[in-house]
Length: 220
Image 1 (cartoon, rainbow, N blue to C red):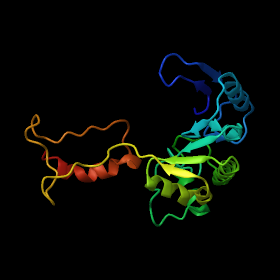
Image 2: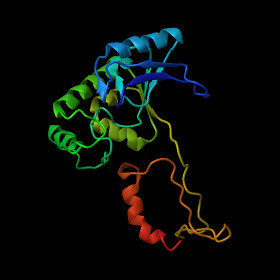
Image 3: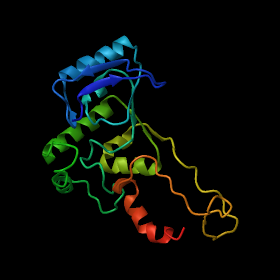
Image 4: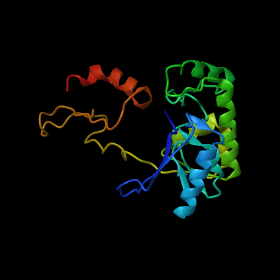
């Protein structure tokens, strides 16, 4: 389950610098956890940590936002502001209210989190928002769309300093003629379109779109 160990590794690779058992395990997320607080405080002191970048709080405790060092929040997902990890966060009709939260929590019965009380999720989301505001965290998002979705789910975060650092493709190259379709290059191998998917692909990462495109892609 989530939050069984707290590990510190070197970004350059090599063996773990430290691995600490968390008792009891945290689960999805915790407001307070004595073991986590002690372990994190030790890491900060022993390795002279001056800043913490948070890419996801799954399996962590909110002590990380109370550590007393500057926090950079990487908008990797919308957890724990919303309990469902995979849904259309850009849907114009989404209300992000208690009723919708209850519906999404009910649909998570077979999901990755054991916590099934919508009020619990609402409370942990409110505490997380308050802690991010208190520590004046800086938000970094990979796209303007991600940032817009984030402040829809957690409007208070719009008051924090934020920036976008794009990743991935810089866009398609210019086509030879305006309006021409993007076709496979016949001079490359068989001329068939090749599709490379890095990592998992699911409903939140384009699976539904890919399924819709398959009939048009199959001739290639």
